[in-house]
Every structure is written in structure tokens, then in C-alpha cells.
Image (cartoon, rainbow, N blue to C red; front, side, top):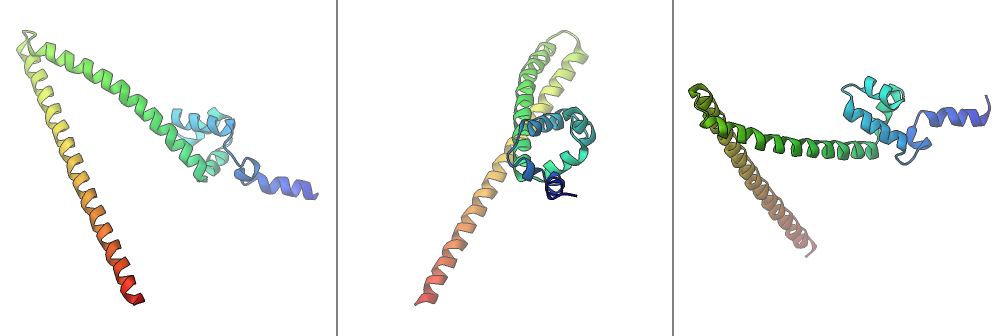
Amino acid sequence: MSKSSDKKKDTALVPEVVEPVLSRRHEAVVVALLAHPTIKSAAQAAGVSEATVWRLMQREDFQRRYREAQDKAFDGALGALRAAGTDAIDSLKRNLTCGTPAAEVQAAKAILDFTLKVREQFDYGNRIKLLEDALKAREEAEAKRAVKGGEEDDD
């Protein structure tokens, strides 16, 4: 084997050597991963091998781009859910006074259940924020003590 074919063979095993920056092919893999439930089906959709997808998944820059794409897709889904949620609440409100007692009770129960769950989530969010603030204050105090302790050692 010649030296050039040896080098080509070595670089083929490490995609960042061949393509040090993310390319259109990599973007196609990101899109395929978002649209397909398995690596095998994503690889087929992107027109690459499963091994290529696995190697790309090891790269930090690819992982970062994939997370960004997941976040954008999730944000879009949340927007659609918000719109559907508004419609669902309107429907439940209509059913509160529809004249069919079973439907009215079911609508009232759904609204109350949802209200309680939302309240619970806000409470959890507030508790987590308080814990994060306390942890940050504790870490800052420990860092200040460490700096003061280091200054005393210098004297």
C-alpha cells in the first residue's frame, strides 16, 4: 500500500480529520436524528453509515449542534402545545355550561386538575430557585474564606 492510501485509510476513521468543521452532511445527520427514532433509520435517511453517526455523536461540536437543534424543535413543539392548550381551555370552558351534567363535571374536573398541577410546578420552580440561590451564596462564602485563608498564609 502507498503512503497516500495509508493516510486516507487513517483519516477515514476520524471524521474530524476529514471534515474539521460541521458540514452539510453533518447537518443532514442532525436533521435525520431529529426525525427518526433510531440511529440506524437516521443514518439511512441521511445517506451515511451507522458508524459515521456514532462517530459524529462523539464529537463535542456535533453534540452541541444536535442539542441546539433539539432545543429549537422542542421550542416549536411547545409553541404548538401552547396554542392547542388555549383551544383546549376554551373547549373546557364551553363544556362547563353545555347543559350536559356529565360533560360539565368532567370539564370542571379537568380545569381544576390542570390548575393544581400548574400551581405545583410554579411552587417547584420557586423552591429550586431558592435552593440554587442558597447554594450559590454558600459557594461564594466558601470561596471568600479560601481567599482569606490564603492571604493569612502569605503573612
